[in-house]
Image 1 (cartoon, rainbow, N blue to C red):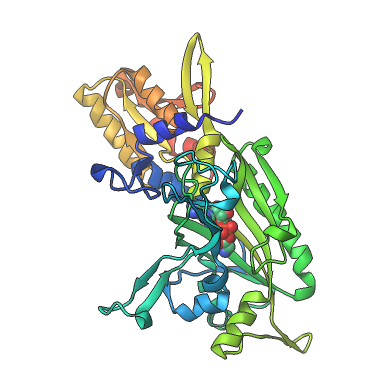
Image 2: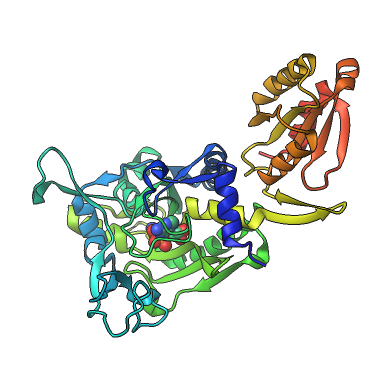
Amino acid sequence: MPTDFDTIVNLAKKRGFIFQSSEIYGGLRSAYDYGPLGVELLRNVKDQWWRSMVRMRDDIVGLDSAILQSPEVWMASGHLESFSDPLVECRECNARHRVDKLEDPDTCPTCGNSGTFTDPKEFNLMFKTHMGPVESEENVVYLRPETAQGIFTNFENVRRTARMKLPFGIAQIGKAFRNEITPGQFVFRTREFEQMEMEYFCYPDDAADTFQEWVDLRHRWYIDLGMTAENLRLREHDPDELAHYAAATYDIEYRFPWGWDELEGIANRTDFDLKAHMERSGEDLTYFDQERDERFIPFVIEPAAGASRTTFAFLLDAYTEEEVRGESRVVLKLDSRLAPIKVAVLPLSKKSDLVETTQKVAAALREKWQIEVDLTQSIGRRYRRQDEIGTPYCVTVDFDSLEDNQVTVRDRDTMAQDRLPIENLATYLTDHLPA
Ligand code: GAP
């Protein structure tokens, strides 16, 4: 059963994962701020992606390209021409709607009138601004709608300086902006969001196999990080829904509360982008293969995921309500690698010698993990709070700890408790908290 949408949105706000942007001014629609727990969770998702894509591989390197790029980039990539949605406008209330998202193609969901729509018109999704003090046509620049193009325009820079040989990849995490017509469902579709994209350059004749390998690898990544396999599925794009650059695409979809929807797209972008940039810039972006004695434009396989959207899916998937000894509890069963706080250190009472030992234990653990010390309320309520934010381990310092130098470690999921010497705590946690 998918988690109820309102439940997770309320938990995200109540516990400080995600807030509405500009909330004190009534909120800016379709932009969100990540609070103390949300920023840790989002960062952990990005770190896990970076680790699997860059750190653990010798054939992929990283990049951090600029958000603002020459408008030529977007002309070459096709975004200025093709990155648009067909819109209709209601003649009664002037609301604009995406044709493909209307439940009833004849009825305006805003005012309820029928037969009031104009003919569909294309609407470009890129945010436009001006570079420099003069607001003229020559100074127009766009906020990037995908991180990918910064990778293509740096293909030769990276290949040459990092001395990469085919097949190789360039990975990037960063903000992207789209003036979405129908933002919504919390952080699922926003106008400012973060992407995690990798362009894998390969021999044209290997592209079909490489594409399948990346579909499998990316699907497995979510499952390895604890996402429920039954809540994930692969869906191949029909030819008429393929993006302007793609020869084939698979979406990895998640079972969201409103139904199956996209988490990530894996596309075979062929040589479309390198070829387009080569033609427009006049720079040589071909690759010379010494062994084959051949010069050609590499093909590209692109796994493109949304960091914010994926973070939301991990939150939804981890949310669990269960009965324990006649009482119900809420637990975020996040994989420990994603959990915002790894260990909470809790003194049984606020007595100063207990608090002092607690702070010492916490300081030693902070070298390695994200730690929280919580002094408020009863120990039971503090456990509940840590369960609700997904903290894998709670360490309790009690009165005996002052005598025997031992603490109790409580496991979030099993609630089993282990008593162990403080000096063994770091080793115990290292064994139980994988990198
Ligand atoms: N470079 C290819 C590309 O950008 P995309 O399918 O348009 O492909 C990739 O975007 C991923 O970025 C999506 O699967 C989704 O997770 C995320 N994404 C796209 N638009 C988004 C939005 N408006 N809000 C949040 N995430 C978005």
